[in-house]
Amino acid sequence: MTAKKWFVTFTGIFIGILALLVVMVAVLDPFFHYHAPLSSFYYTLDNERSQNNGIARNFEFNALITGTSMTENFKTSELDELFGVNSVKMCYSGAMYKEINDNVEVALANNDVDIVVRGLDNFYLIQDKDDLRDDLGEYPEYLYNDNIFDDVYYIFNKGIIVNYCFQMIAKKLMGVEGGITSFDDYSNWMSEASFGAENVLVGRDSFGEPTEEVYLTDEEREMLIANIEQNVVSVARNNPDVTFYYFYTPYSIAKWGGDYEDGTIYREMEAVLITTQMCLEYDNIKLFDFNTNTDVITNLDNYRDSGHYGEWINSWILECMQNGDYQLTEDNYEEMIAEEQEIFLSYDYNSLFE
Image (cartoon, rainbow, N blue to C red):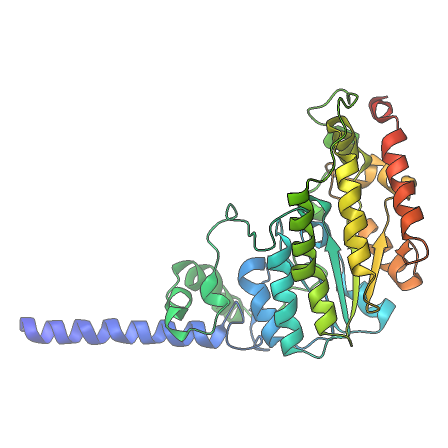
């Protein structure tokens, strides 16, 4: 074979392989960038930032659950049963408010949604409205836009081809039924968690008394208001037919012990008060605060660390929402938040070590 023929043959084979890879990724589409899952293949859900946007665009649902890792243990089957809906779960571990809200807006633009269940983490209330986590790996922008040219990062992605497409084909050949990871199981971290005081209090042997009282600065207040306006309430204002079930994620009392020691309880409660007032301006926002339930937040057996609670708390939260328990209203929010602050200021944190 002459060098020219060899080159032409090699080039043809190379182009053929590339074309095959393009077709394989586009057809199987493990991140749902182009279409919903095919019924004859099994899809594993295990990559929130790569798969959630495709779920929001291409799945059919009328309710969704979203938030950070504090919402990952929710079960859509329970939401479906309690509220009579067909829901999906799209959580973003460690995400700030903008990332979560952006995906909510995509979901609402592509589906006739009735209910959004979303956790509001106190950790991220006082953040710039456009902040995104840049320490969680490379962000897959090519999956979030409509630019077909940067789809090359998807269809020629070695990790996607080997770890997803080849695995899907292998399962198909082994006779695995088509389907998808259930949304009850998607992102659920219960199987790897241990609970109790020894995990929550690790690295601590006491809580000290505060030496100062820290309140919101003017700059922090402006930042908070801009964050909540852009990433929490504007989507409710723009979608008046959707009911938004927001809740302050109920951290353990140990988390609040650290804030008590730092003197930042006052700033935290100011932020909650302002956020609550902004949310209560909208009839389609139902806002819940579970921190006055000391049976939950002071029982460290409910927690794997100072913030993350077990899935039984997620189930309880859904039941409370359905019943209207611990809902903040115009009539009770000032009293409830004052009660919450009093709990955090008066609790004997060192009793946790007994």
